[in-house]
Image 1 (cartoon, rainbow, N blue to C red):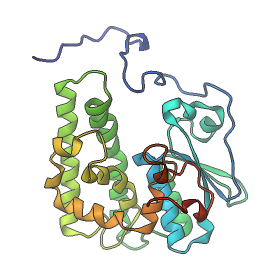
Image 2 (cartoon, rainbow, N blue to C red; image 1 turned 120 degrees about the vertical axis):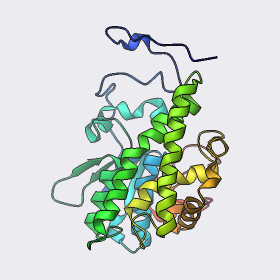
Image 3 (cartoon, one colour; image 1 turned 60 degrees about the vertical axis):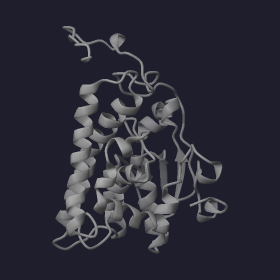
Image 4 (cartoon, rainbow, N blue to C red; image 1 turned 90 degrees about the vertical axis):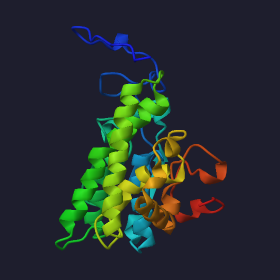
Length: 283
């Protein structure tokens, strides 16, 4: 049976929006909904996040910097539970007026600097520490793949993930539309990784750090219910090779559990202040 046809009203109203997993917090307006200060730690970098694919980009970047010997990259990480609407507290909105995780405060200079949007955080840290971003002619290639991921992520998450896993009803058209786009994006990455060890070239860079948290969970079968089977992800052998290779990196193993608030307790790390916080955790 075909999906029922929706006739848009002359003027849209939020009152007509149906339910869904995030219906209780979604609104068509921006800004703080309550006065709530953010916690702070002692390090130069204060990260406010959750271990979603976008949030994991930032924590992996920090842990990779520390693994590479950049002691100045020590950071404090605090969990922002977006399901409970904590991203709408006044302190977090001051950090990110778009109320999305992750958000970062860099206090390493004379004037504190806020950085929001995951791609901006990766680029800021890469330039600050001179790491995971080449300075030669390959820089443009790396940045192209970084922004490829930033631009394509919403099709996978807000598109496919929403309609396949979170929407209150299953409708054929949006699921097919975003399943096709998700598979196309996997094919883009697969063809690239057939020619290159990493997305940006021969070296591991922020392009990989941005893309891995989105693509690897499909390879591992850990995202959006049975999406791995539904999308035939095993077809993308080059993406699988790349995803498994990156998953073995110590910085990735640590970074992916920071601000994780679900699953087995030994795989969660709600707050992170030092490497000692990983003791007893399953990485």
